[in-house]
Amino acid sequence: MKEIKTFEDACASLSINVDQFNKDNAGRDIDSIAYEKLKIISRALNGEWEPRLGEVDYAYTPVFVIYTPDEVKDMDDSLKEESVFFGGDAANGICALRFYYAPYSPTYAATYIAGGFRVALRNRELATYSGEKFIDIWCEFLTGKKVLK
Image (cartoon, rainbow, N blue to C red; front, side, top):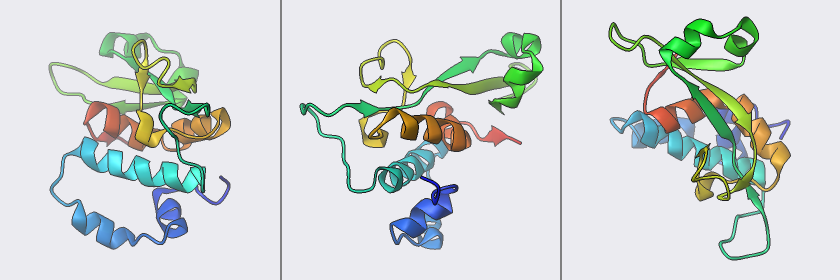
């Protein structure tokens, strides 16, 4: 986990050429590119472990909270620091996404926004790390919108 701090680190650990990845994904939707990135990051973080449907193993996925423009206006500074912002135009304002926690997957998928089985992680610690460290990519995957810096 300590070696995987960026998408480029995840690619390097799996011998994936980042430039080729970018060429192969040029012109695709934001959420599709983000999903491909999350699959690579999850594979790098999981090492040899892969989630198996119907097995006893648990799999974990980060869960996020999405804030509306009105909720962002009322948000305290500590929550703003933990959030990434997306969307935003004259009609909609700016929305925010914040890591919430890392439950079993797909147990809470119907209730919360969960990432899905192909980006599941082998333990809660890795899911938390992924949700916090790669929140920009998760936001682009979940919303299809570029993160505002």
